[in-house]
Length: 536
Figure 1 (tube, rainbow, N blue to C red):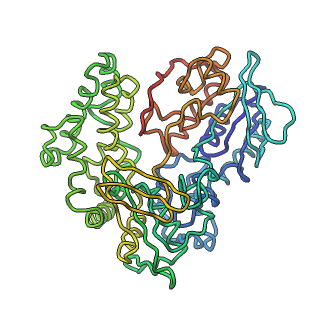
Figure 2 (figure 1 turned 90 degrees about the vertical axis):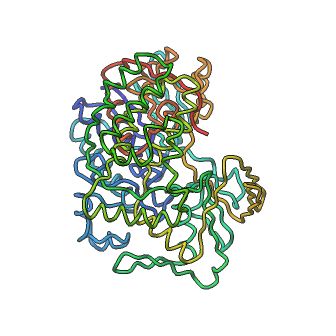
Figure 3 (figure 1 turned 180 degrees about the vertical axis):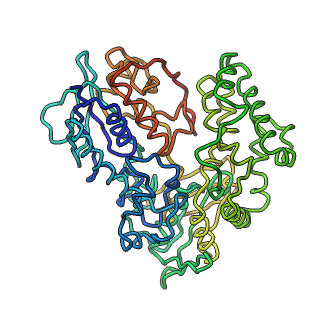
């Protein structure tokens, strides 16, 4: 029986176990989870999230584990769902629900997986509250050291599925949080001036984590939300900030699963890659223009797409939001999106761009240095804005805070400085100085390099080979050095973002898990190129 270690029992680890079961070959599997409960995952745990924080994915998009998320929800007690503000009678498959509730689904599915695995002849052990301290690849397999284990355990394959990595909370003063998941949920935030770096869903979630300590939201029958501030919290003032000061769109209606593209097909992208890196970005942009003109000629005419290139499209994309201001634009966008959802109407250009980001991503490892920079500052920003559209309920709550006079948005511009002091954080931007009593950096996960690996021996093995970024194959197994080839599968998202800038979400976790499961029976067929650091 081949012996497999899975390090991390969040979504990637869960889908890896699910895919191993689907292969119908009994294995010995040992699962290590540093949290108290395996199967939940940091993005959905009750320790790192509040009930106000919504998962940015609906049941229709979540890869099912034996049953869909919606079917599981319909089996839950009505009173239990009500504690999360969820009405069982109104459940549907496009609904955005609290992250903690999704965590309960994954915990339940993990336990079901372990039970099914044992029934299928698998030997499964689960170590909770157990951190893996080191990994070493040897000619005979993989040695693994973990908490409470005096000697290392030997495996044929180790799967690194450790998920997101955030800065240690003890390394900064408590007036500064290096991420919303670095102690914010347990912190008492006084009514003061709070700065939040980031205007995406993570930034809004950070704001919600603060405001629920100082008041409550009240929703009317017509869906309008009002925020009522507690007496004594009048000094609370929250400033969301980013370079552009732009808010994301509300999540829009579109057919799922995705309909295929007509022009920017897998074959078309492969053909452009074969022609070489010189001019690759511009050639593919030309294909994008054709796809968009076919899908929505009126929108293309409105923004004069035929006159734009891979660099100037970004300005045209955000022009309307910049013109009208974030909150006025958010109201109009919310009304449009909700009307389209009621009518089941798809906006062709939005839906086309949503499908394009996955197709175009394939060119990233093949771009030359100049075009990588152009892509990062141009098309990548458009794609991220499009697929990171957020739940309508999050927009409503933001507008409620705006109406209550609690929240505002600051545009930093491209040139700003931040100074973290013992009890304050100071932002210098646009010739102005802004001082905050509490500051939260909510810009999201940054790509990590080999030097950031938490496993000392594995880190040294990769660095000795000159690998600044882990070199993985199609099945995510490390390819270099030879002693590591095929022995360690690397499914930790922060280390995969260099040549896959849009790697994120539960669908990707399921795809990674399925690919890793193949490593048990066949070697990687193709290496992925290692890239310079892609993100700011």
